[in-house]
Amino acid sequence: MNSLNFLRIACVALMGIGLCACPPVTSKTPVGTTVKAVRDPALAGVWRGKVADGDAVSYFTFLPQNDETYSAVLVTPSSPKDNGGFGVFSVDTVALGRLHFINARELMDDDKPAKGTMADNTIPLLYKLEGDNTLVLYMMDEDAAHAAIKAGKIKGTVEEGQFGDVTLTASPVELDAYMASPAARALFTKPLVVLKKVK
Image 1 (cartoon, helix red, strand yellow):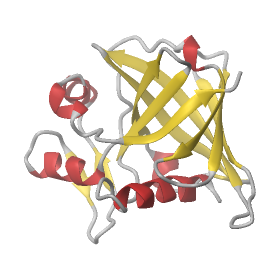
Image 2 (cartoon, rainbow, N blue to C red; image 1 turned 90 degrees about the vertical axis):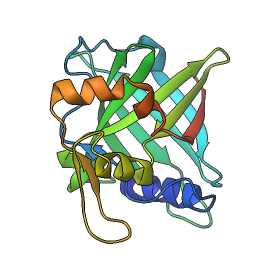
Image 3 (cartoon, rainbow, N blue to C red; image 1 turned 30 degrees about the horizontal axis):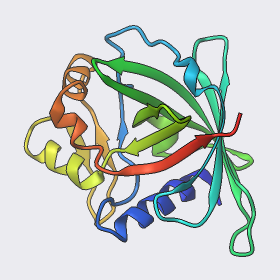
């Protein structure tokens, strides 16, 4: 299971309850470029959890880098149903008001350099840290993002087809102003994954 498949499976799980479509929404510009990005030290370490209502357990390891980013290694072990797989992402964290975001860019897809929209753009994720060593990641809902673009609330492109890529193209100032607003919070509807810290 490669990292794109992991995100697609997450989407499919959410689609089953009417909450998401595929593939993940990406952005040409990372969230938070108008403010100082500060690496959130609470993310460092190994986290374990299941995607949405899926069965596979995955591990997220956030490794601090010298440039104040993280390298995030996502591993899904093999099982009788799947060979498992891994992905590597470059991750930075930023706060816009009370909202905390991760910008994730795919670097490796199993043993190959990443290609495609998740390598060319960033994947904006909303995250919440809860008091019992719980990390909740929210992926942007594709249908909600499509509707926001269509309504002119945020600039972006939508490819044709049922699962056409949705890409935000707003300028850094426009993107950050929107992502700090309640309207943007409403795009992150349901958790992608709930993780518990292992160590």
